[in-house]
Amino acid sequence: MRIRFKKWARPELEASKFYIDNPKEYKGKWRELFGNDNKIHLELGCGKGYFISELAVNNKNINYIAIDMVDAMLGWAKRNIENRYDKENLKIDNIFLTRYDIERILDIINKEDKIERIYINFCNPWPRGKHRKKRLTHTNQLEKYKVFLDNNGEILFKTDDDSLFYDSINYFKKSGFEIEKKTEDLEKEIDFWDKRCENIETEHEKMFKEKGIKIKACIAKLN
Image 1 (cartoon, rainbow, N blue to C red):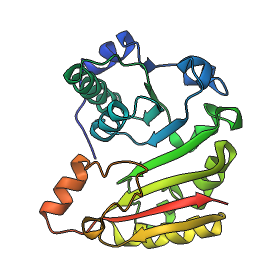
Image 2: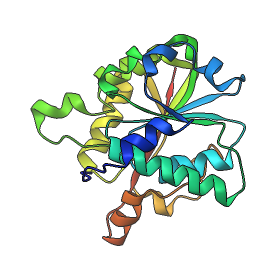
Image 3: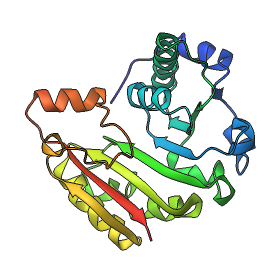
Image 4: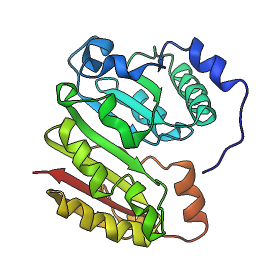
């Protein structure tokens, strides 16, 4: 999703207490930053933050890291998180936003961080053959995630794109993940996520559903 430059985004992020501008400094030390031993979940490509803000505010016993590459997106995510926590009169103490290239994620997270779960929602499908290695679910990326995923770590994945979905199922299997569950029509599945999380509809998800596009999803667990 392209978004126009927002001149307010960078200053607001730099002033925010839950934005990390130097994530390399916290490689292997994210638990120290949170200041507790709660489980850590990671969202790759958080966009405007509607998903992660809802998830984090409803699960204060879990720590969240949300990554994106675009200041404007992170600026909106920062505002949406603030609004959601203000609505519940809660302190923002279990989530950090950061800007980084996910292809280089091992620069900022390692096995000491013990990430329990990764969320990938409606990532760029990169449909052209030569660009498919850029997919967040490609085997090249999955091998990186395996470095810091904890024992039995898992990836929760949603997409509207058929090709990306079926290719991703193969990517997961090739990289040693077990497909615990999958669906080609998430709307028809009752409690598909097995109490792992609520089925929080992202901005993209609502848009695709209005167009009659079925949402595909899977849970891939690291063996």
